[in-house]
Amino acid sequence: MRFKFTYKTAFTSLRGRMSRSLLTILGIVIGIAAIMMVSAAGKGAENLITSELSGLGGETVVVQPGKEPKGPSDFAQSLLSDSLKDRELEAISRKANVPDLIDISPEIFVSGGASYQGETVSATVLGFSAEFMMENMGLKLAEGVNFDDADIGSKSAVAVIGSDVREELFGTEEALGKYLTIKNKRFRVVGTYAPQGQAVFFNVDDLIVVPYSTAQTYLTGEGHYSQFVVRASSVDVVDRMAADITRTLRDLHNITDPEEDDFHVETQQGLVDQISTIIGAFTLFLSFVVTIALVVGGVGVMNIMLVSVTERTREIGLRKALGATDRDILLQFLTEAVMLTGAGGVIGVVLGSLFSYVAAIAVRQFAGLDWGFVFPYMGAFAGIIVSVLVGLVFGIYPARVASRKSPIEALRYE
Image (tube, rainbow, N blue to C red; front, side, top):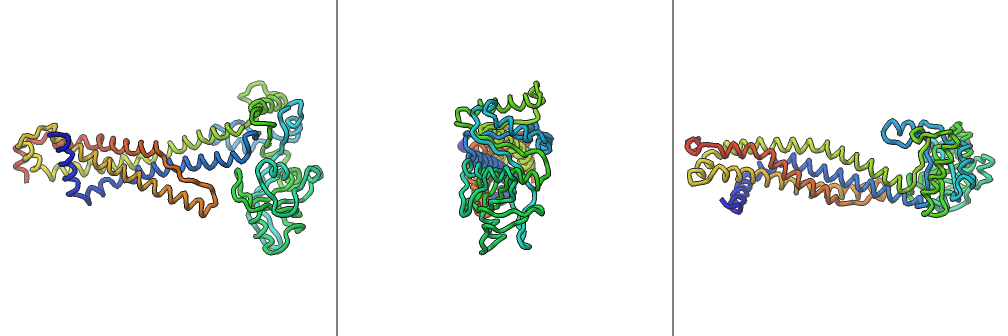
């Protein structure tokens, strides 16, 4: 039989069993849709994080404690490391050591929230330099002023708060000059940020910024910092500045073997590459897990095709009696299997894209994140190819069973 006739015969057979065909490919549809959603989510997350990192500026370098994370244990080690202290801050700040540096600020993450007259708010509390944040992260004041280097030097108990924090704690009251409490320490509000939403890795509206010296002394009680954020004179000298910081800290810590580093220096491009690698690996892992649904769907296709072969035994015998060869019968049933799984792949791509688009809208609407929908072309292409391969792999056995039936016995079958 010609291929056109084989295709037409297979299509007619599948259309005559529409309900069974749809139920047969359900596993394929779910598997491909899941792969599309995982791929779209991975790409959306990568784009979101990349855009957030761009808020730091290309001339920004981040120095973090602990070895460069390459696995879960390394991340834990970085969180517990205390390798960044005042002496490291002083060494990096010296022009003789890092000549391309124009600004630096330590950062301290403080757990917990804040309270005012019985009202409590869950907020992101950072020990930082308010002026550094204004100049390098695009934050804007709605009212009041920033605390300055003098406040940092004197460990003043002052704070600049986000718009949501202001509204939840003070409502319609004037916030400036009022005192809020963080871990039993009272802080005077000297400024409030204009509503801005997400910026870099935090929500400005839920932010409370206090002098890092005050946070270190009164809130954490620890002598080390969470990280240093350093700004170079230009993008062109970022790599050179990162190398100078690395050399300075190794000399300070008497480290000769790079494998023994108790810190790591990240440029913006380095962070983007690292995050892309992590998200890519995670997406690949989830896609591999999702392929289980494709295997289950393939087994379902093979099972239904075997049932179909049994039901159509007389049809097979009649076709062979009229001159159809074993190859013709094999191609007909194999074409049916491929058409089934291929259709499942197409439907899965459409549904997965639709669900991903709706999810992106929901994230933007309810989470306030700038999450965009990205159609994963490679995921769609791979999904359709895989679905066709599933049809070939799991359809070959039923097709061979059908092609090997004896025409005489098939005609006698009831």
